[in-house]
Length: 510
Image 1 (cartoon, one colour):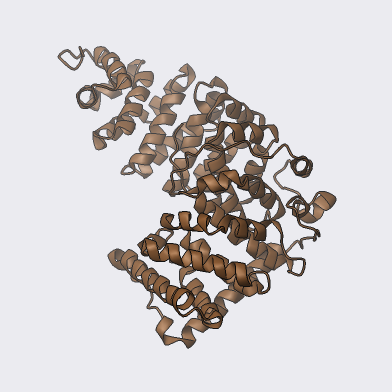
Image 2: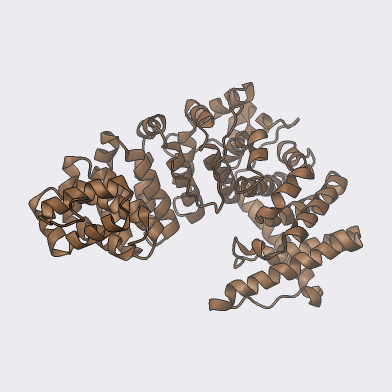
C-alpha cells in the first residue's frame, strides 16, 4: 500500500491487536452508536454514564461544558500572553520577527537553536526549578508562534535535544503531580522537541511513555475541564510525533489508538485533539489487525463525522482523508466506505473547499484511488459526483507537483477501467493532461507509469485517438518506454498505444 502521509514520518509499522474488544471499548461503541447520523457526535456530557472520560480510567467522571472549546482556547491564549510578557521582561529572550522570503526558514532555525540551548542551560546545567519554569514559558512562547514551521525543531542539535528531553521528563516526574502549571509547560516543550526524530529513543528510555500516558489517562480530580483538555491535547500531540519516527513501536505497544478514539469523542469541538488523534489512528490503520478492529467497531463513521464538523479546517481535513485512504487498503475498507453514507461525498466536498491546497488534494486523490481500485460501484459513484472534472482541475492547478500528478494519474487510471467513464475523461481533457504529466516528469516512474496506464485505458475511441495523435502521444510514450524498459505496465500499455498510433520502430516492438 502507498504509505505517503501528511505526517512527515515513515509510518509503516506493524501494530499488534489493539484492545478495542475490551469492556471499555464496548461502552465506547455504545456512545458512538448514539451519534447523530446527520453529522454530530454526542458530547461527553450527553454520553452520561458511558462518558469517554470514565472509559479512559479516571476515578471520577466530570461533565464537559458545551463551550469547552472556546474556554480552553481562551485559557491557552491567556497562557501565551503571559509567556510573551515574560519574554518581553527578559531582553535576552527577545527574538526579532521572522524574516520573509528566502531567509524565513534560516531565521526560524537560528531562533530554535538559540532557544533550545538556553532552555538546556536552565534545566540541565543550572538546575534551578524557578529559573527552569521561567525558561519553559519563554521557550513555549517562541515555539508556539503561528509562523513557526513544523520542521523547525530539526534544526537543533540531536544530542542536546535528547538530553533536554530526558531532563524535562525528570522534571515532570518530580514536580508534575504537585504543580499543574509546571507539568503543562514541561509537556508543551516536550511536544515541540519530539518533532525532532532524534529525541524519540531518549523519550522512550526515560520512561516518557509512562509519564505522558498517565497524565492522559488519569486526569487530576482537582483540574478544571479546560485544564484537562489542555493536557489531553498536548499528550496526544506527543504521541502523534512519536508515530512519525522511532517511537512508533512504543505507541503501538501502549495501545494509544484506543486513547485517540476516546478523546476524539470526548472533545469533538477541540481541533488540536482531533488533529493528533487522527495522526495516531491513520498510523495504526496501516496494520491489518487494527484495521479489522476499526471496521468492526464502526469507527469509519467517527472519521466522517469529524470531517463534516471540520469541513473548513485544512489540517483536520487533510488528516481525516489520510485515515480514509489507509482504511481503503483492502476490500473490507472499501466495503465500509460504501456502507458509511456520505463518505465519498465528504472527499468531493474537500476537493471543492480546498481546491488551492495541494496537501489536502493529495490525500483526497489517494483516498479515491484506494477506494475505487477494482470497485465498479465506487467508480460509478465517483463519476456521478463529478470526480473527473475535479481531478482534472487539480492537475491543472498544480502542474509542478509530482506527488499530486501521481495521485491524480492513479485516480484517472482507475476511473478509466469502466467504459462509462472514458467519454467523460476525454471530454474533460484528461488525454492532454496525462501526456503533459509524462513530458513534465519524464524521469518520475510513479507519474509516468500511472499516466501511461491511464492513457492505455482511455485512448480507445476515435476522439481520444485524435487527441493523442495531435498532442504528440507517440513521441511521449516512446520516450517513456525507452526510459523505463523494466517496468511491465509502461512497456505493455506503451506497446498498445504505439500500435494504435501506427508507430513502428524499436520502441513499438519492445
